[in-house]
Image (cartoon, helix red, strand yellow):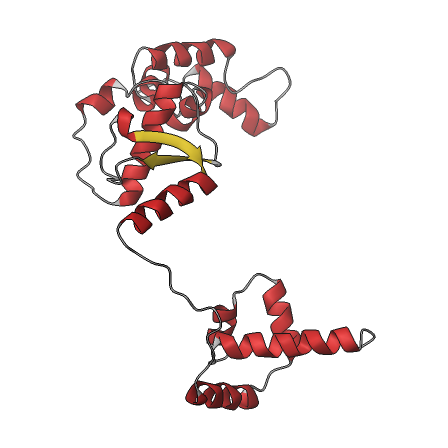
Length: 218
């Protein structure tokens, strides 16, 4: 039985042999055909099957096109997930279709009524992260929630004794702790690494910083 080899496969074989001069894996005609088919409402998989190319290649060609959901997406059963991550992605896609462009990482989609499963267009607003956090804080304060007031709080006698004991038994160079902190580890993560609290790590780093300020040469 004779096996049929497509033109795209022949170009791929040329690439594998190193014959890349004047040879392109895909033609501009294929790219324009893919974009035209994608705009008709076909999914990337359906376009790939018609043109005999990879689905990821079609997605790359059409990545800058914002449109309503594909025919395949309309026939597909809607997601039953109520998780906030799934709803957030659905909200972002809806706003991208509304604006006709991709949202950047600094743009957040806020649910005005606080229900993250309500992705109606009139319930969505695009804002930056600072304003988004502010809106959620206003909503929390409206419910009567108050932030904890730890201003001026001092450790109890038992807490001070525990901290002093852990600090004395922590047999590790403070410069090692400083190096871990510079690498991006949190105080809590360093504390878990050495079996102590983040307060002990903070105290050790504070003492080291004080010594370095008094004796810069050391």
